[in-house]
Image (cartoon, rainbow, N blue to C red; front, side):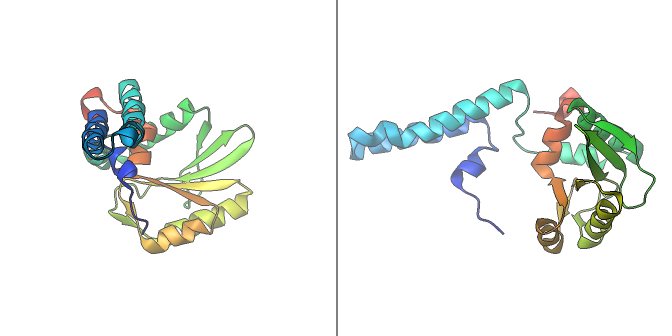
Length: 188
């Protein structure tokens, strides 16, 4: 599993935390070596501005946990409506599938994508559903497949996805996909 950097961790926190880290580093560096103090703090201040802008627009997710729990608590009918509408808002034509390996067919600019979302509630999605989705992609001449889960993907599933035409969407990415469609009280 890849190690997270300080910037990756801060990108999921409120904007002011990055600004605070930048200010503290500026103060410490100002005492030790004043000529470089501004340059040490600058990346954190830029990150704070970026996060603040995204949070102001409502597209940044600070902690996806509460939103993921809301998604896991939805019935299949509600969850599928939310996911389908999220892709429609991105310009896709969304149609329900007639195949057990996937749930929706997405079309945008003539490119077909198969979307599997039915296992959104499980804690860990394994390799099996991804293999079924990849086989459906091959059978239908689609460009790729997307598998959505509110839980995690197993290590085997992630390594399989790395070598297949299937993309994985979970956690923060899933919440960002559907954030504008969740009730206002469930978003930050």
